[in-house]
Length: 235
Length: 235
DNA sequence: CCATTATTGTGACTACCGGTCATTTTTTGA
DNA sequence: TCAAAAAATGACCGGTAGTCACAATAATGG
Image 1 (cartoon, helix red, strand yellow):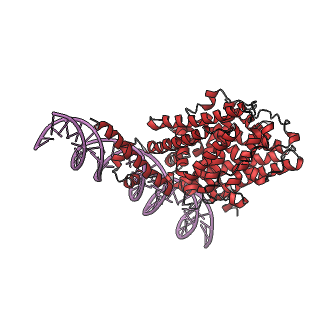
Image 2 (cartoon, rainbow over the protein chains, first blue to last red):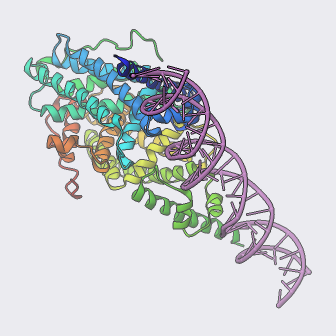
Image 3 (tube, rainbow over the protein chains, first blue to last red):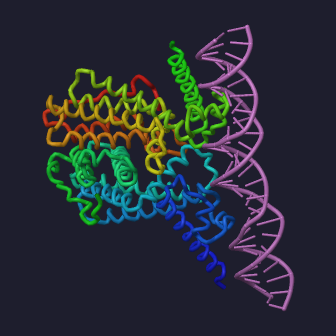
């Protein structure tokens, strides 16, 4: 009899509902103002019930982060299936990351929270922590792969260590994405608009700098990187 | 009569003492576990007294951030006084940022907190908020200046918009610094050590990629960027 | 030097939130 | 139909940010 299977499924559904409630609240009021009682209300369950599905508030946010990194990783992995020169793949991975964050700020918030947790906390076990790490690791591996492809097909300068380069691209992309996030979600983050710069142009120039820095000579002028924002008209 | 001046001075001193107490506690137990009662105890004042010097916990951390950004800005401004090619100055600014964060993790924590605040909060006035923004703005301006110098002296490719390029360098540096911070301050941030990469090499390669991306052709091979870590032997 | 007033310091107290648990309600299997 | 298991509930607890009535101290003026 499939009772336990059904229960498992239902449990997962409810968990998912709670996550959605939390996501909505984060979107509305910010991660800092997230309140477990409110999450419970929004999800139409009691507080106690909420705590049967998540060990703690941390765990809840980590649950969102798990979902987020899972989605992001899937999208990045999809990029790798394309038959393009490596340097193009690197560009696409960056653009994927960028689009993901601008479209799902609440997910990015959860991802930053995850970083925070690992820094401060005593790391009392959360099921989600490991899963998050695995997801991130996968994304990173994709970046390494893209670089290796690029070195093989002659579009990326092979004098770098692929993993080290991947780390640099990861970190710098993170910085760019983080700025884009602030631009969109922070009051009084005037920098971009003050300077009359738009995100699209900024990102493309970022890729140009990086591209120029990692390309082989023969490739150097070749990536005129079309706008990744052309489909979603953000400011 | 210099009574009010003396009082002002004393007040500033006490405020400074409280800030130091808070910094120490952040260093010991992390920003998330910072506790106003403890800060008061550590500073040997009562809670009420603490709240006469800082409107709120946020305000206190913003006070640290103000101090931090002030120090960082001063160091970056000092770089600009050196008589070096622009691209070298850019490198030095990056290195200054890096060193600052590795040596003062608690300050970096406060700076990230500042970013957070601006994102979520209702921005109930804190004296420090404006000052922080001004400091950051100054640092950013230094980066723009370094780039302009580089474009003038022919070490940086003048086809970029200086401000846009500064923004890119700012954001990417932030990403790199953030990774360095995590490497030093996060349990289970295994990435670097797992890959057998050290911070020094990573940063220099970052500067190499960037340098290669923004240099003029004649400059391209020229910056063999000596190690910025050579004075402080971190892992 | 004292009396009055202004300033600064104090810690008990409140409000709020994360997390718990004894109890109730629902589901399960016979 | 019923007893046992599982899930849901919300009153409750502990801890912490922030307040406030009062106490101590310092400045002022005669």
